[in-house]
Length: 87
Image (cartoon, rainbow, N blue to C red):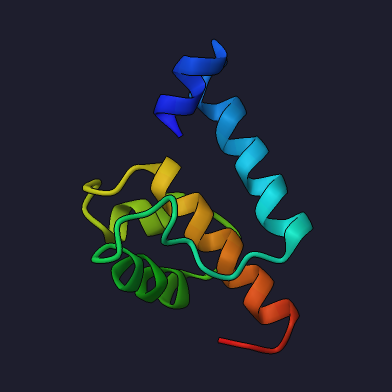
């Protein structure tokens, strides 16, 4: 996300928003193109523990070691999975 933001001369948060829209619009369920595979299960566990409403408890559960830019695509993909009855 940061690399694309730099390339597009956009804020990281703007590009993260574009990615979020893409994931939801296209029904993407796998965040691995944007998030390292070893982080996905940790993020998913934190989401399941704290819910989908706010990212801060998820960030805190991960001891601040995982950025919001990595949490958000996982969260969005989980939402898509739940929408389609997967998970």
